[in-house]
Figure 1 (cartoon, rainbow, N blue to C red):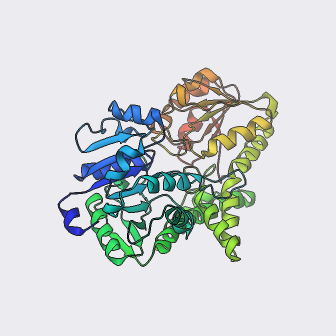
Figure 2: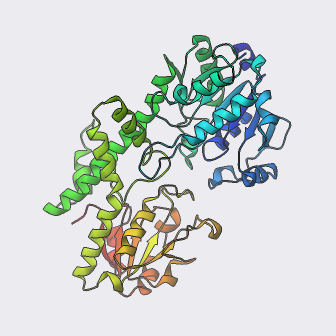
Figure 3: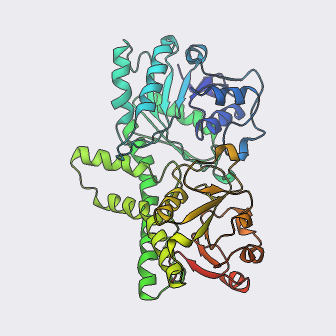
Length: 442
């Protein structure tokens, strides 16, 4: 059973089910803290890479961080690791389906695997870390537990502790961010708070239930979606009345309680474009109103289309039809510094422009050839080789910000550059000969 004495003695085996963007950093964090770690993943490629000491993911932070000692075991075989674990953390994907309804199949499959193999004599604690709507942990796992003749509180305990770290950000990794943990048993909550305090330098806050912890996580991402949607909508409004949204926001930010956000071509990643749909679904099933959250998600989801429309309009004013345009997208991943392209708005933008008849090229220095998404666009190894009429900055990678804009301008016939992240110096671009446009600028 999980006790504070065993935690303090580092006498625990921590299992991590799902060794992807969340699971691998979590497993490495607990190993770094001194615990035995057993990692489980269904991907033979991921496990083979880890067993060879190589980073299987896109975050370069872990390129030289894979352990090779007796406290580290990774496998695709649950029977090897699950019975040995005192705490089992589940870090599997929680995407949405094409109809935007939550896809809980990975949580279901993880539960089936775990409850088929646990050692009930250990009374392990099974902790879900994936983002869900309030109630999912019990809704999905309690029937599985009962169907196997197990009893929560006797043979095992359930808990929820949402992940919060930021991929590619060394200041907000699993060893730094504060955590929230909820469970039914108060002793288990206290023990988990002690366990996670060994993982992170941040505070660990116990809450009264699993459902409160689940709700807290989804609300964190919903709030960000709302805030981003506000500035994105302002970026659509202000240019129509002759104002630059960035100047307006900078002026507003002089007030002490104003929270500054920057508009862009859209929102990407595994959390913000997905998690609000979980709360929307729960609200619908409960008969509760959810208009604001739904509207904010719609604003952010349609930003790539809005940007594409404005680029076509501006290039038409320059005398060019969409079918005559060669367009280079600078950046494909959803955020700077990493190769993670999940839910990237660059893909939606590219598809919108293709539908308009444009020829699309893509350059992203972080995405290797074998990971480039197939589609109606051409990947290039150097931006100049595309000879673009239009250049759109989609991701503010350092390599992109540091481009030789004069050299790139010489390769462009039309010379129109659109700043989709509001990060470029307009004067430098004009000096290099570019005609410029930007999100939220007249």
